[in-house]
Length: 136
Image (cartoon, rainbow, N blue to C red; front, side, top):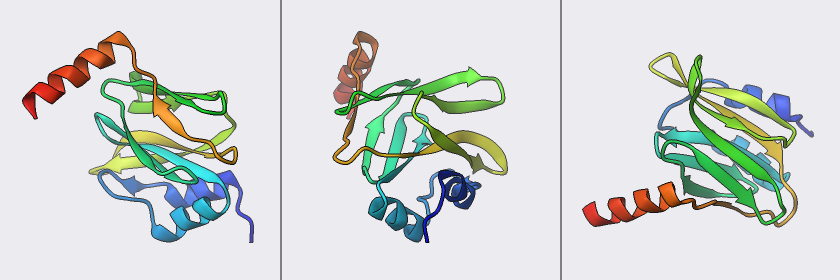
């Protein structure tokens, strides 16, 4: 059976902050070239499914793919939700909750075969990384 992005997002809706998505959903996404993206904490964005990684997103940031696509991790830009994503990639959304309050709005989208993502490093983020390294 083939699921739509909306059906996958519905299965993820209500994911609890600090928890991983259900293994069967992640496996389905991995097998069907679909990527799940959500804020895991205030400084970390998780990618699961077709692409699997944890990328820094302290106070937001831009992620770019080797296929020329872009995803913005937005920090406190939406008054109804502290952590969201903006992209022109067709996607479905799901809610992540912390203690029954909306923590983040995650997204699910179809990946391009071989697509990889990384954090675009700007001057502000580079300074953050250098400070973090000093205190670890």
